[in-house]
Image (cartoon, rainbow, N blue to C red; front, side, top):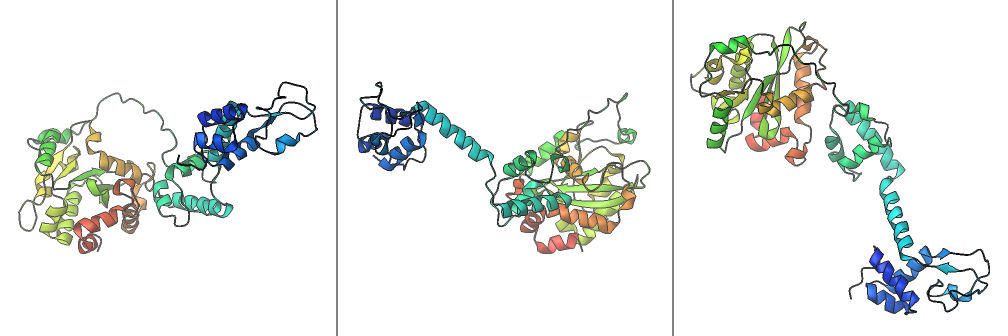
Length: 376
């Protein structure tokens, strides 16, 4: 029989041990029955024997196998010695409890715990996710779920309140009336609906697509953030634009064409899904090259009140709220600030990219030169 070195004795094996010593089997015979080393059986008996009387006199037989009185002929007689017995169920309960206690503790040294605490605290301050923080650790082998557990149990100075999405959102107030863009009724979306988008996507399986949206700004802000996201790569481009200016949106597309060239523009943004914002209504100005007149992309629109259809860019906007709080004006940020935030988002490691960051993913797909052209 193959030995397992007794690393994990279960209740069945402990029952065999109890039965074996009751029948006065030899140590080696019991060990062979359950497939462990004889020393495992002897250690199990010494570790889990219990005393059942108050007598202090020691029986010489208890100093050798089986170390308990289970198989003794004087078990039920008054022998005058301290009496010890082994019970499989109580031994199993003790082992189970020890396993739980060990798993609930901290499996790091004091130095490692301090280093982890510092890394998490600085990472959260730098707007990084727990996943990004953990994957950047070099000398500490720990899982994302364990870090969250340490935070919840207050082993770290970072609290749940410090995490961006750990606090439950307040229930939204119901609006008295539905809202839609009035300007959107003035042009036809034939061949540009969400269903058309799905058909186009299915017929072009080798192409990545982009999603586009505005972040949303307070009324007193004169500017806004345009978010353009390549969904499969989670790669994002951010632009600070004037509010209510469709010309600024068009200028972003023209600037991208200048930086990339028409061919690379078509390769990176073959088709784009967006919402019914009136600033996106002039699809022809966005779709066609201002220099050559050729089609550079294809615009599709989500259904009304169905923002989940462009979930990638919606999630990106949610991430952006760590940098642009809802009650703060976009006017307070310079274009350099926007660029720095843009780079930081693209350098975060993501589990959906197998631990890579969007920047590295973009470079692998489109090349370093193309990436540099985007941010020159």
